[in-house]
Length: 167
Length: 455
Image (cartoon, rainbow over all chains, first blue to last red; front, side):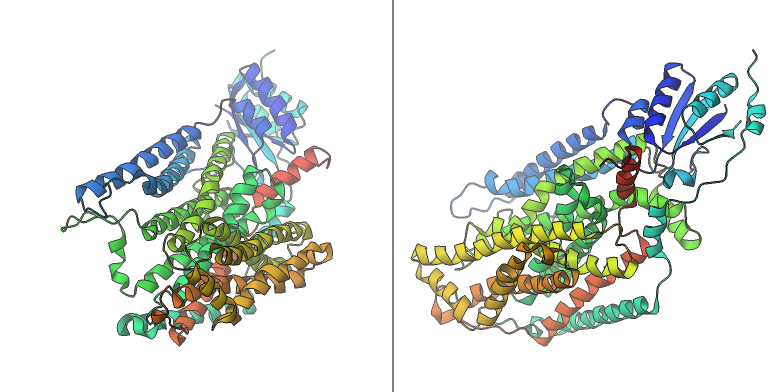
């Protein structure tokens, strides 16, 4: 299927155009931008990122593991110190906290890799180094018969350039 | 009407010439270009500094801890002072990256990368000192809870173990945070490089393309890492302070220690950011990105934290007097007027007195003044840790076990080596990765253009 790439200077028109193309079901969209722009990104996917689930799971695993590790180890070799109980939950909070942050943080990054589909070994054909400059790219993979319509929409939406990258 | 085939459209779509690259990319990536003779000279000098410290460490490891100035009753000396100092330095990066991010303080965008790099290198430097301090470096793994034949586990009620977990967590999260922030910028560098750099950046950028999905995940990741790093940064120096406060040594056993250490850490960290970024901005001509406004805001942080630290100094003396505890009173009297009085007065003047000059706006934007002040603060904060540790141990409860400590040549050699080690990493960083977060600066610039410069 052909992919048309429109090059834009500002995020606003990209959002409007993306909404139009999605509304008319003209093809699959991908936006490439040099920095994060919530407006066009929302046109692709409005739902909150699933990275938060990874953070939650990591944090809960960390706190559980942190306390469990200390309680189990303290009881595995029970040494009586000053007649105090083997398990001292209050001081264990510190390492419990550190483990929450550690696993929460590491799983958040795992979330970035999973949700952001990284690493990628090949760059998309629609990607151009221009999109790590200051321009924004909107790539639309559509059917042959929709190419002209998509192109016209792009040009109407202030695209400074439209290219067919994959016919 | 029959739509034209794709090929026909393709023929019609003449590619316009590729627009010239972004000025922001050019300006910031130009820092990576080439390296002057001065740069290589400086790098060579710090590598030599590291080499002499490594030689000293080898000598100390072979001979024993006697080569350090440790003697009864002082067995925590310059190495622990350096450990606390470098952990403190590491705090500003996370504060700028995480806490200011959560507060949406956009001014942080131009300085966060340099500060994060500083954090990573400072914490890596700090982590060496417990190893150097224990003498038998190869026994380090005793501190880690691992299954062993004796069935013994570490003592989780010990602040030293809390410290191990806190520092390692901080180091890991700082590195992860630093790398995640770098990914989009490495991709920018990848698209504009060749040779070995292209290979390196291609691997490290992980195929980043700046798609909506990637940005969305990236934004969320930075937000969550900031949320996690914020309590972490406040906890790390609190835990370090408990290494002291949980003991019963006069001058250490104080509830004020955690907030006092955290404020001091942020204070010294900002001073180190100034020490690094003032010359970086000047040498690489980054005045357009790292502006006087940034330095003024950092100066305000320094003024605030200096005031907190000054208050803590006062509170310590007041409580020592008010408590009526003889050992406390003596310890603090000895701090100011005993054998370590010079260190104490360097600490007070550099940390609590000189920074008060920052009440004057003219001085907050006077970079030569800020550079000198930052140096004095770094000096003062090193001496603060020296005063706390050495005066505390030298004047404990029983006068029969009082003693004095003088750092040995070996300790001085490793102290100098630690600054060289830190500088070596920073110098290499300057030539490998963008020192200013390009995508964040661009975000502001493109939004500004889109809204007609309304911000």
